[in-house]
Length: 261
Image 1 (cartoon, rainbow, N blue to C red):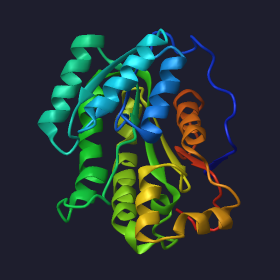
Image 2 (image 1 turned 90 degrees about the vertical axis):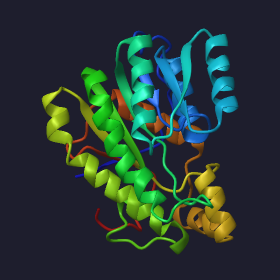
Image 3 (image 1 turned 180 degrees about the horizontal axis):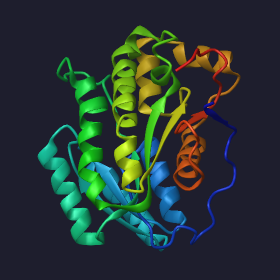
């Protein structure tokens, strides 16, 4: 049975992740930035990954370092295998490896992108990312794939038309990564899918509200409450350090209106 989680209110104690090395993709803003900051506050050295928001990534690194933490910013287009390989080369030369990989970056609602961009980023790039990361992940390390209920349950519960390409591609990415669990198990690497309802304050919520006015407030009314960015980031961090659910899935927020995965 999939794990249901209540809001995580306690942050990890300072120093509890001392010596650990983490990469959070898409972490120059939003959920990724909050997740990276929380990991750094607990003592982990964190890679802030960005595609084109270098100024925001650098600002977050400066904030973490000023607070006594350790962080570096590395730009990489996850849909470009050469760019991904270069990112991991830098991580290996700087830190020698990784202990936590948070696969947070996703997209598909941006304008001006190729028709199959959502599948390129949310499935193909995620598989390439994990395959490239495996040699750097230490035994006992943890990989987290971040997704949404609208994607996780897409085969049984319809979503908004505007979000459908993202939902289908995110679910395809999740399925492809789950198929890699035997490889990860053999390397001593844990894997957890963290799925959340719509999260207030994210770029996805903003784009959905713009395309379908009232969509987010309607979902909030239906669910009773929606997690904010900080609350959801805390759940991701918890998934990186707590026990792995039997089915490798951590559900965050209301699931009463969703069918089976």
